[in-house]
Length: 344
Image (tube, rainbow, N blue to C red; front, side, top):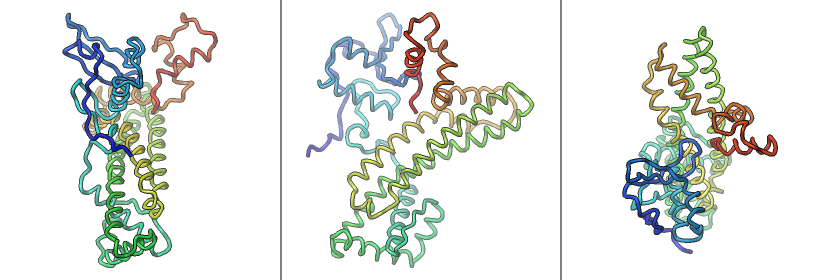
């Protein structure tokens, strides 16, 4: 089996990628598609969709450039800007994360796995995700003794034999390393709950101002949908990693699953970061700063979480698909508009 390269630079061969000194790749703020952004000699900036470039210059998807362009498209989910000569992030090369987790989250993930082992050994496996509860139980001397016993039992159950218990210990650490990224993202998600709390407070503050109140209420409604989607992902992850013996027996496939969910969560949470930073700094009081941030939040949420028909009808003129366009029927019009919606 071929081992993925851990490093690969953006070295495209087609002359369009070598002609301009000032150029980079980024995602479109509107459609989320990958763009090649270049500065012309006279100073103007042009943004070209990478897919359009491939069509125009007949770049074969199976060619070296085609393969690299596909990786660039994926890489822009993890990095804002890439330039020719930059290294691609590890996510698109080896599947590893290119961002770090702290020791606290590693400890939480390890404690979670070992507690699963202890409860599995007792015959009633239990998944504990509360960090404080995990830490309290894990520090108990009796628990530490049970963890060592569990390693022996797992080694026997997996057919390794007690003499190879260190293999089990290493395997548990590998699982914990993967899940530590999920724990980090779980903490990041709580910042969205902070946004929700502040919106709820602003709804109280602006209870008698109809215009602002309506926008706040709409933002809260859409944020509820966002929260449900995040929580469903975390619940699914917990459920699919809740049987520790299955995870250990099928570590390769489980790692692939955890990483795919990790990358999906990271991409979704990354989009929130600029808003979260503003909400963290916001003082909860009446004023233009609060009103503007509510509007920004609504504008961020609407294309992602508003019901499709509602969003399409609301934006069909703004998005340039107006009544003057010629369509066979309304379904074709809606299909054109739907392509402009965010997919997450």
